[in-house]
Length: 598
Image (cartoon, rainbow, N blue to C red):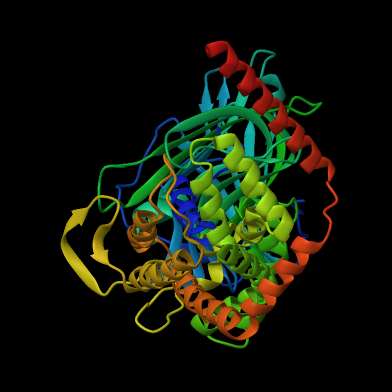
């Protein structure tokens, strides 16, 4: 199990960018009115038209003692439509009325791909499984919402109740499950489990990209979010306040009234080798259910079934917004505090593509002082390059002397290679936060810009008749533009700060070509919004770099500053003093070793 879910593909791609820059109670309403506009659906409305199931052991609790068959009942509000089955009193279908799938139809998160049932083991009669029971029901409506009450009574009188309530708006479904008369049926050794099984539909063009962000996570007893692996089959036993089956841009979250312990979690890939999958992941949770003081089951749950939209899900309780992976540590903080509010503001006034471009401009302007200091350091290093080269040649056979002389030149001139690297390191949290931002930016879903019809997934300018490992079966233009702009940026950087090749050091000219090419490969299946961002960012960075170097920076003034620094007496700092003593001790030890060898 992963404590911090880090996308390996993101890390690989991001490392190339780093090299270039350095180099997210249930309450029971009073029934006030009779049922209104309740919709009864027959089974043929579903995709898989199974024949009605009959069971001679399942008998209704009405006076006619008739055998029941499966029926479907719908509740809906302005956001969702939920359809329930009388067999098992389960949620059989959920439709998000304001969101569409790849074919332009209302998106279905659930359509016979979920099972949610209670398993009563080791009872005095037999094991009881609610998924095999046919429930009676009634539907009621009031000004707060709609409810459906399911009930099943056994021949011996024990009754199970499932009461669902859907508010007049929103994506939260409330559920209360309780029993009557089970205190005589459940003995001391009886165990009751809630089994929640779910197969996640594929809802994106890129199944590999979507699969990276389809995962099971939960909030443990310490209110920390734990994850099962998104890249391989995984299982775990732990406690939880809520369980999230995240399907990239959509989510199904089960919230408990109280903390549940010893839950068995399982996550597995479905048809991982297929290139056109209907389902991506299979999630299973087996949740122990305790009896109350009367020996009965009395449990309240809440089910969030809706978009993984930060600005929707954060309005619900129990910190379920933490089921969205914003990035760990400071990266997640930057996304929550900076990039999500910034993009939300901009997207309310501009199109998605223009909002991304404005984000680039603002981010680069904020980072420009750091970039300026980096270029000042590079200018100093360029001026000192002849002296460094001369010292290297003079002491080429004495690495210790060569190092001492190089540090002396830097110290006298008031320059340091670290001064050029530090600003680049300061930019890393911003750029990695962006890497985590775009995959979970729900607002990008379905938003078009130029030739890209959906900025949350890859753009396509040509389909390939074959599949290329790592690259895919299509050609995306935005990654090509990002790679080309990265090439020119790294090339300009290389000409400014390229140092003579040292033995054992990598050839920077080769790296200069590898980085843009790798970017083109890895970004081909990523969100086109991310490639758009880095394309514009690279172009703007080049413009800022040329402006600083050719307009703002004055090399003659920097040279005079270096000459003045050389004339000033240097006060040796603690670090420099310790470094000097270490060097002297090493030099003395080397001299003693040389004498012994003679």
